[in-house]
Image 1: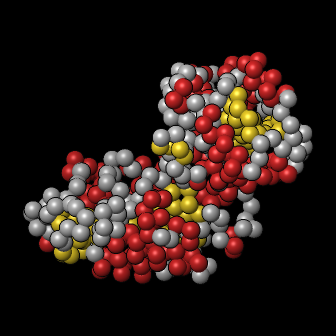
Image 2: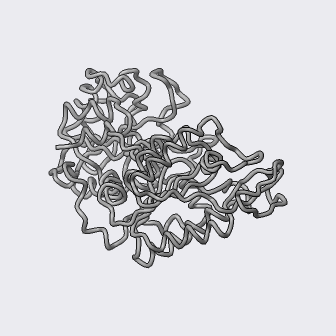
Image 3: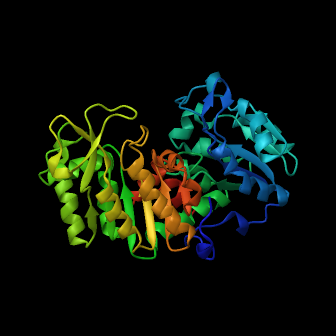
Length: 409
């Protein structure tokens, strides 16, 4: 999903080398991909990660490169595990990429080198799961050097694993000329536009069940955005910190002081934290459960808050209409259970409509965010959707991502 047209002329994040800066003709190009796709009974149930790599594959094929794919699958913990072999992906990659794909039962060693040597221009060689080796996770220099010996150029097109300092994301760049792939470049552009050099005002949406797992994210966001909308169980904890009785709602009471500290920091940085004013409450959480909407100060003792109400939705939408940039991470309520996806659906639809009209840039990612926006039917209308989980969250925290940092000039 590309950025809106108005943003396409913006340069890539400064200091990074692009794949297009290299002459790749007849070169063996090692591409770090994320092919950790969902599989049931040996069948890939979602090819999104494969499809998003296609622009890079197409570009390399058009330039006459020889393509070697590095990827992980599952968590084999440095051990050979036949159930986690990448061999099953060969026919899927051939179908989705429209290119000849061969498979090496190893990612290092003589056999892999021999297969790399006979690889033809425009063809793809899929190397075995790199996490079969302890040297990958340990970022072992010798393992990284062996990987590098297979190619002439390294391309990282896997932002989703770039928060890990592994041999195939960081160490390998010490031994080969390195560049960002087209997907990585698009991702870095989107993130740069969203938080590093955004058009203001900026509104961030942060939802989910717990603030304990997103405390660093919240502390970073209040320094960078004008409005921070909180939803889900996370919002409940902030309401509790403000003296609101939450009944049986999901609430981290032990995080009360941390929530207060975030609110104080937001105030010092002129960031308005937007909390629910009214909520949808139930006694039992199930599909189409009997529910009512109440002011947050009137939550019954035996009820739980599971979505935001119409007054809150209206207030958030008015704020969105004043903004130029939106960063979205997490749902407003229990979106998996209908009709308690209403708050998330309404707010995301508002953001999508303004994005389509060219009035705002909207970037979303991390955790359940993609599922929530797809459930709302508007994911394709956002400027950019990142499929990265941990990497997107660490970027929201303001952390340096080793795999990205390694691509700097």
